[in-house]
Length: 157
Image (cartoon, rainbow, N blue to C red; front, side):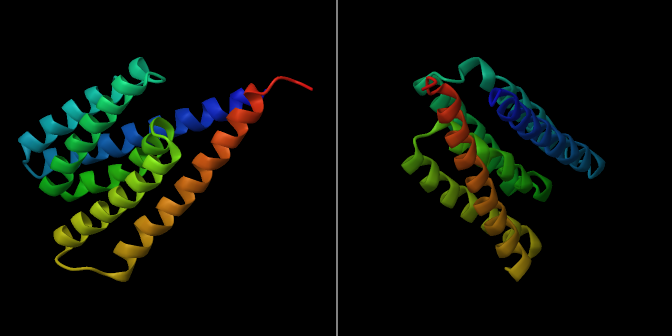
C-alpha cells in the first residue's frame, strides 16, 4: 500500500521535470535560441532514459552525470533552464548513496544559485533563499520516501 504514494511522488517529479523543460524550450524558441532549444530536447531524451537504468548503480550514475552535464551547459546558456535543478535534486537523492546525494544536492543548489545570479546580473536574497529552501524541502521529502520505501520492503512481523 505504501508503494502507491511513492509512485505518485515519482510521477509528480517526472511531470515537473518535463513541464519545466517544456517551458524552458518554448521560452528559448520564442527568444530565437534554436541551439538551446535543441539542447533542451536532447536533455529531455536523456532524462527520459532514466527509468531504463534505474536501480543499476553504474548506468544510473552515468545517466545522472549526463543529465547534470546537459543541465549545466543549458543553465549557463539560458536562464529558463536553471530551474530544472529542482527535479534533478530528487534524482540525486534517488540515485546516489546518502553521503553522495547530500554532497550533490549542495553542489547543484550552489550552481543553480550562481547561474541564476549570473543571468540576473547579481546575487539577491530571493535567488539564494528560493533554491536553498527548495533543496531543504526536496531533501526532507526524499528522506521521507526512503524511510517509507524501507518500511514497505520490510517483512511483516
